Length: 200
Image 1 (tube, rainbow, N blue to C red):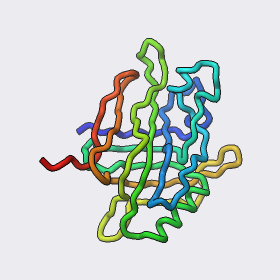
Image 2 (cartoon, rainbow, N blue to C red):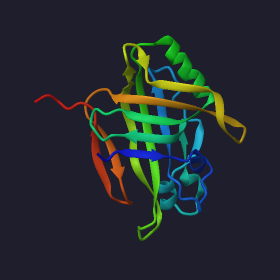
Image 3 (cartoon, rainbow, N blue to C red):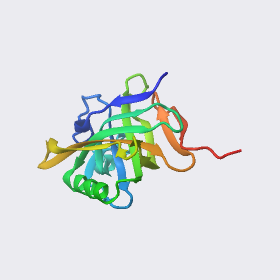
Image 4 (cartoon, rainbow, N blue to C red):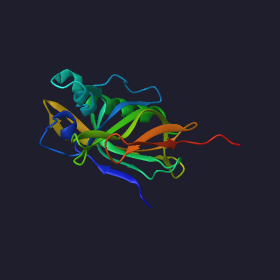
């Protein structure tokens, strides 16, 4: 069965190099049970905005809360999103505090964007291959109490005096259908649903 499974370059998200065609992505928000900061802290590249406004550097910059290193989804409406990435120390501390405070059910309000390069399009460019800026889920439980979330205490990446810490999290949908846009090439999005469907 085909799945969405991308290994992503965090460096390309924040130090975007035109000669690199590596896929990249970031979280536009991540709020655990209302306890983590929602203010974006990382300046990332949005190649779709940059393409719409050539020559204006600020137009291609957006704020994010985390860099992605991997994103997997088996495409089923109730399949978990497996998210791996890097967070700054402020968000890492807030995530640990949220875990200390609530060890049973943790709701996550989050958003994800992943970009891939299309070398075949008439205008060769990056396009969003996974786009969902408003999702609500819960951290998956493995067993009776174990939550599917991991945080590394050692910094994995340092850029411009900012240290980033790796994390992984599995999130299942919470609530009714939510929209995720997938694409295999530029200007050809496909709408997929994530979450429960209404009973008939």
